[in-house]
Length: 188
Ligand code: ADP
Image 1 (tube, rainbow, N blue to C red):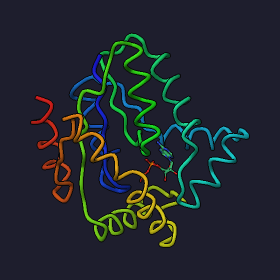
Image 2 (cartoon, rainbow, N blue to C red):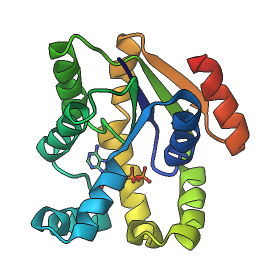
Image 3 (cartoon, rainbow, N blue to C red):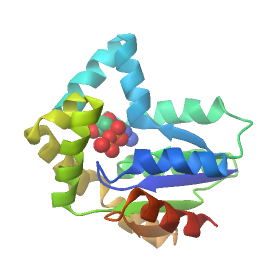
């Protein structure tokens, strides 16, 4: 079973590319952001906590995220592969994922990293705010907090996956089609 990770800062276009990739390659798309937003919609206790944290621009607790991913993997035994979008986002999450997969005799296949610089992140998220109506996209202070959280907690994973020889970087500054072509050529 294949386990691809879509990596990159907020607003890099992970969600957009994920939708195209699952169509072409028949992978199961797991977006942790979408799963969390569904939890908010349900109005559960977890959803209320999650909403507060997302609207601050911080990350949800590692244990919560790891449990969500574990159940997604267990509940989809028949798929050919997964495309994780937005997970892992911390070193603790990456370590837990490696452990979870090795217990099943699997491993991360490739890390597909869509890179853009901070100015572009800001621009993209502001543009998305006009289309998608996400509260965490609307406030420049929250956008900056998310960028800072990315650099502090998520970016160290670049080194983590480079060491494993699994890190593949794609320039995310191009058009949707250009970025998709670049990722597709890596996946063959
Ligand atoms: P973006 O890529 O634009 O930041 P996402 O939809 O992937 O948007 O995530 C939205 C928010 O959900 C994040 O800012 C964070 O608060 C939370 N989140 C998503 N995935 C994770 C994760 N793996 N660990 C912790 N928090 C997460």
